[in-house]
Length: 278
Image (cartoon, rainbow, N blue to C red; front, top):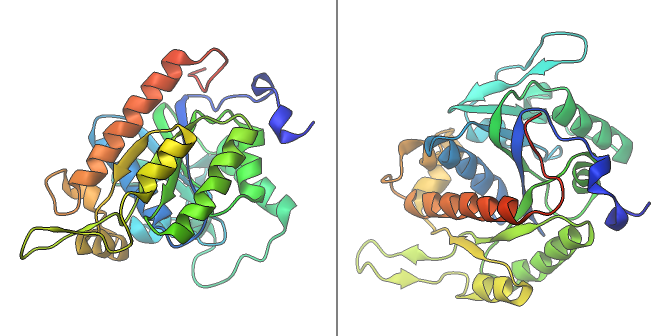
């Protein structure tokens, strides 16, 4: 059966996981992993139990951004304990294949590892499981969609027209396979000048909002360009972990609240099965 005709009832939920959030982008370089990591931490700081699955097998940067190199522990032949960092339960190929060794894998191997991350990890009781997808519309995305019910997808872009051209593909992919698009997040949206306090639109203005309006989905947030966001990712100290009042964190927390509110709205309006606690 083609993916667009899949019956959601054929896909078993992950026991204990209430909401599965796919964080996606049409192209690389838009800060998707930075947004996913800070979104997960912000949701946790807002009081929720949160897991983070790094599904970007070819570029697993989540362990670096969380300053974690702990190896996941097997508790039986088929069960894995995720590592914990900044209050999150986390799993990543970067923990299982550390260093600079490349992952030269075909589709079936990618399918297998994503299945294991979803089904063999002891996630426990989670309000949110955030899944950081690789850029584009490839094998990993299809495996996720075919394996579990995805509560909703968050699509990351920048104001650049080139980046937005690929947003269309990502949104259309999720719609073709009947996954709710929660909305668009415009990363690197603007720079607040520390001297004049004016807004500088480095990569353009308003394109993310126009794209969201074109597809009839919310603009979930405009995340500013702040050196602390980049430094936090490079040093393993995400700005969201420093609290909402930390430099660069306000727009991230505003985005996290918008995502949580949108999930509440989607779940309330759902007429079919969603990811639920077993």
